[in-house]
Length: 523
Image (cartoon, rainbow, N blue to C red):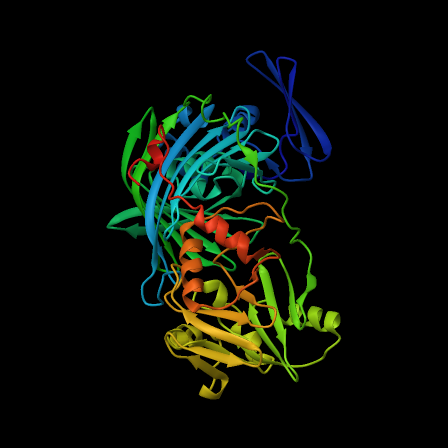
């Protein structure tokens, strides 16, 4: 509760309780029931519970509506059992569409994500067991934050890596946001930051709205059933991603805690996730959750992607980028051909021109396929005067991604299954597990293949994780019957020899759910 200058120090029976304040101007003493209470006025706002203030000043202070609502929410979700929980485990299995990420533009990819998050509040630790089924791949990982660092164990490959970014707050944060129970626990500690925003009907029932504004610019609005105190919706407004909506229903109770068995998640009005299975446990067994795998070996050293770099890959072939924003440039007599990330195109182009000392324009920008990362920033390529080259079935996706209208003169289409030669670069429209139409770039003289998303890795030299998409890509490559020496990952610094790539894909074996893991039993 925000109050004007009141208490700074409160002394009960000679025991001093210090509250946050700046400076005192005057002191007042009052004796009630044999207890001496001293008050010091200060020139700043203090955060004091209404009950403490009422007792100290011996007057009735009305409780703020925000506090009344939060108290009702906490009571609805478990009361003291929730607030004082030493640990909680949430189970969230879901399934949903990922627009723009399917094999073809008109059908979204469907992902299944099963996750179990254990939070050890007493020791500020987290453990996340995650099973994901995207396209033809299976991922089974265990993440453990021990209070100091996070290790990610790849169970299907018996490897591990240290993930410095995944601290206590960030690990499993999506599960925390999508759990109405954990959000209720969160509200209990944010009373002074909440603002009452009136009432609104939802499915014919009156909801009380509480709003939380974060320093990041995100705004959360909680829709709380006025009668029961249950959270029915959370609207999350993000400065860049737009509006996200979590809808909760079918509330049940397990081990003293209430939770919604159903949660649906929307992004800008489009369904993104549907709950399949949800559960919660109070004070679960922590031994197994925080036990790692002693026999796992590290994946290996990673490339540094933190700063912009530019490199020469072969005569007339350059690559520049940082983070996940990498672009490859193929030099011609009077121009460049670019492919990869367009959202960092200007910066990457400037870096390679400085490296090559050749100031030529970009004449063509190759859009390898229709997925979201390949469509971002295409206006940048047009602004630099480039013609966009794409598979004919992806024309609609490209035009939709542009913020400005463009003419047919700025588009160059490759018919399905055909090839196109631009200077010394040949583009082949091939079918992969990643995209039904994918423009593979090939340079005959260095016998180099340039591709993105099909064999991406951040490892400097160790054998990367091999998955089914890579096997299908190798088959499509063999069908072209071209001479290949090197494969370049457009989205990273790694290059493979064709001998390595063929060996690794030949050794591939389909992964299965290991014994003892209920999270992936059903495939």
